[in-house]
Amino acid sequence: MKAHLAAVLVLAAPAATSALAQQQDFSKVEIKAEKVAEGVYMLTGAGGNIGLSVGRSGTYVIDDQFAPLTDKILAAIRAITPDPVRFVINTHLHGDHTGGNENLGKAGALVVAHENVRRRMSAEQFSATFNRTTPASPEGALPVVTFTEAVTFHWNGDEIRVHHVAPAHTDGDSIVRFVKADVVHMGDLFFNGGYPFIDTSSGGRVDGVIAAAEETLAAIGEKTRIIPGHGPLATRADLQSYRDTLTLLRDRIAKLKAEGKSRDEVIAAKPTADHDAKWGAGFMKGDTFTGLVYDSLR
Ligand SMILES: [Zn+2]
Image 1: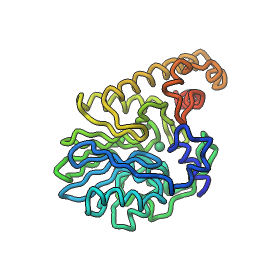
Image 2: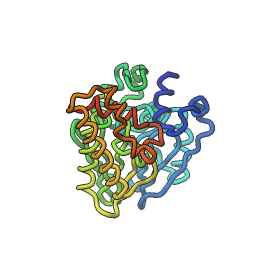
Image 3: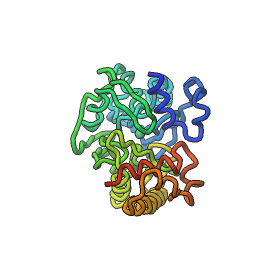
Image 4: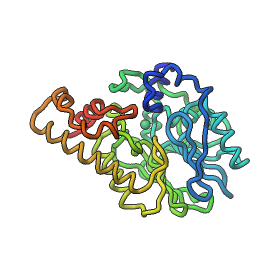
């Protein structure tokens, strides 16, 4: 469990990997709520950004960070609404997005996710990038409603469309779109302001990350607010800049790979160097990102 926590904390705590020990102390984490649209909020604490919808149907949560934070998350929600959490959506399997599942399930929420989230959480997972094994989740933490392509919630006066995308950050990613509120939660398909982690051990592929950004850009408007998996609340322009950067770097790395260079040679060529100051300042460094892009290119 400790190793698992460390793995997800690396993801959750950009720029703080050397302070990992302190990061494991959840007592210092504060959950903050930011209003995104009428009835829609983004909650931040430690781990993936949480989406929250409140209103006449009930409370609806997208991702739930770490188990030790559930009480604080519920307190932050109670400051907004007295209604209990009815649904939890997992954008993907990682522990910094699903760690609260068991607690929220016990409190009466139904956890919903793509079938690959449940499949992977049901078995031990190994991350080659972090050389760590995550044990299978207990039954109470597993999504109880799964879907293969998409599911729509008619909830809180909105249409909340959840749909699965081709392998990207993992092979179980979903995007959640509030049609009326004009808000999108992209989970870890979008790291706002940093290189994304491409979890190749969980079926992730850089081409899928770029495709998910393209698809979202085509579907949203100028005023759409985007909740990223990590990083601050985003605009369409932020997502465009992310897409452009990833496309440029993917093409550079693909060219080197096509020339026959090995993984080590491509990393040594530093194809991301001119972007590392801006995009590699968080937990995902240019070299690691380059290796993951290389691995996931076909
Ligand atoms: Zn993730």
